Length: 372
Image (cartoon, rainbow, N blue to C red; front, side, top):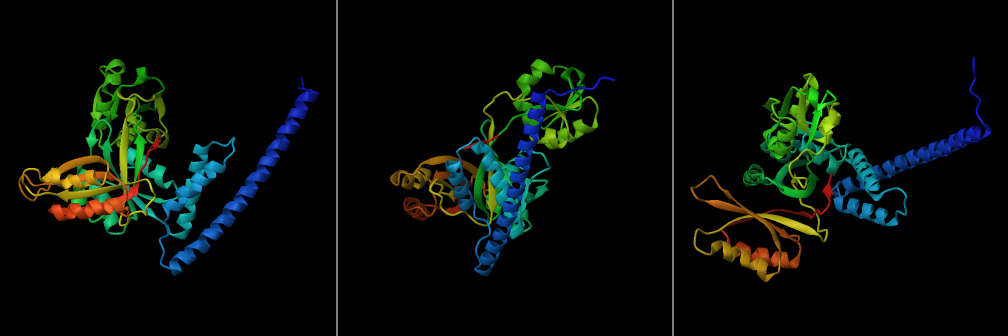
């Protein structure tokens, strides 16, 4: 029997590897001890907050900590990974201080679920709902502290039903998140030639039509209530495939037959985080408002004049029927700035005098980074 003999150089390399791994293990142990020390301090902070009736959740401080750490970071550890790790630490600490429930448009593994995980991390309790209305209901009844709902897509436009809910519920916009929508062909089989049927929600199906016509012509297509349901079905039926997210593929243990099959690559959905409260001024904010005007010529122009006077940029405006009276509309507008900004206050005071209705739906930090 032949025995493998290690050369002196090989033995030295093995010993070096053991020594390096031992040092890494020691650092991991230090990190664990530091995390527990931090958690104990977080519990002390929670007691002070509770005794003084202060908010447990302070996203402004979280942003400031991450920004400071990223500036201090000399590498080679990447800043993007640093951000993800500290968001998890913040969320885990907050779960010790005051457990939070986050409602979202379900089921699990939808893009809304993915957006919720990006913003809140995985240490929260997530509550999937069957409709956008149910998300609002859960937050309104204090079953959930926060809700996550889609508000617009860069290709499809506004999600009108979400806007309509702000007419029925007295909730605020707490934050926004921009999520890159990347559709993937998912299946238990390993090659697209083995696919015998395809499941998809109608919206991603339309967004992937070009690729499907080139690569899946003749394959029967069946509608699903969501991308997550499509992935679930594909996981159960041999030969079936689904159009779904990265999260859906991982959650249902599916193979990624083809990635990024959408027609337009710059496909971004904007989601709103809703709550009963608004955030403090960050210095880079937006404000969402709802208003209605008199039914007379020039009324809308007159309402918007204060924004021009105060040099406030309006980033979006949408109109929706009130459903209370024929041809009666309410407008939703996003402007740059926080309700506590002096020029925003002046503009809103002026608009209040000119409008039939004015309701501020929340000021929140403006997001520029698109999550992947």
